[in-house]
Length: 199
Image (tube, rainbow, N blue to C red; front, side, top):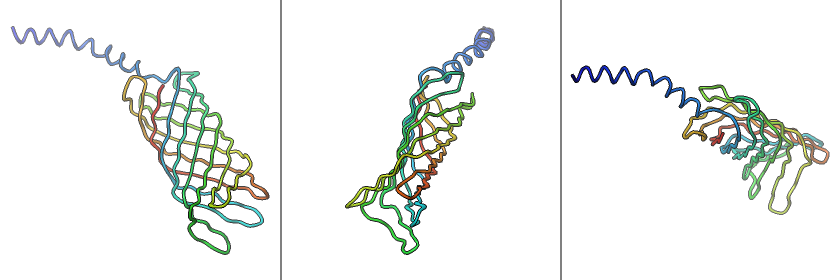
């Protein structure tokens, strides 16, 4: 009798498993409203190319906030705000090279971007075109650049922690060419970030 009950139970449960699995898969889709937070760090640098060449560089932090929505399955259009910064970067020029004190280099950017998710692995590629501005905050002065163009690229992997939230990690690179007085600033930040995405 017990064996018969077990056989009947398997006969009822097994056909239902694929349907349940499909139901869970359907809950994890990239559609509708999109929100992503990006927090991490990398190797940051900014080089002034002009009458006097010099650069700032060092380990920097990054934060980004993206907001948008899906306009096709797994394809997201968003607007993004980014902030990269390094405290007390190393200064290098033709005549000296040393660490700065009480100095912060910041590069801010904003603009549109696209993300595509490869499902069901939840791996994504992302790219943004940014308007960027660089600022050097020193003890007795603040130098601010004009507005320039930049690009941010990222590849990441996320794991679902609820029906709509995913947590993950991404490798990213941000690059920009920013005018400043008679010079042009070549800015970059390459590193790793943790991500939290609602979609």
